[in-house]
Length: 199
Ligand SMILES: [Zn+2]
Image (cartoon, rainbow, N blue to C red; front, side, top):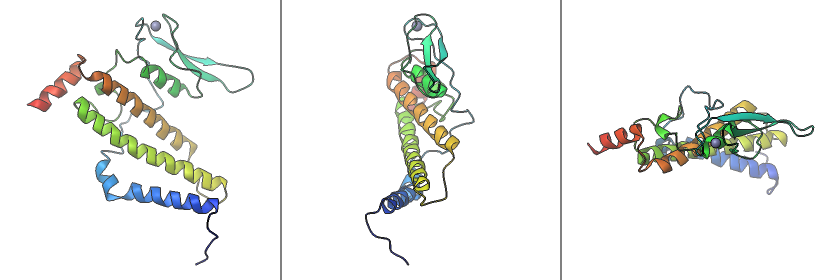
């Protein structure tokens, strides 16, 4: 076996990659991860929530500035409130908008992660562990991209795969926000879940 000099960047990346693979394949991670199947809904498709201020709908707008690629932003059709700064992806703009307009949404109705019927506490635990798995897989993607770019490995993760993982992570963040506000809120699906949990 040929030993390469220590301290080189590729050693560092190889070690990091190996550690991530070991964590992902560990028994503990397997038992803690509730699912890798989040549902058939395309995470890049986001139905816009109503505005918390005026309850009008949001409008996803494509904005051009100079010669750079277009950016996205959701702006309320009623009061003109913006959901975020300009961002690169339309789904990111939509999820950021939904993340600051929580009143008309309920975590149990999200089209991903199977949260219907779960109490806020159970939904929180489920999302926490799904999120932990996504963070690991995104880190692995980034390291493998770096290794590919440095000529260490021929395998480069697909760009679409990375975008989808990132979108799922943003959905998790939205879910966490919705779970936080759900406690004490009169959402029928949450009340039903809490009731059946106490029976
Ligand atoms: Zn508005």
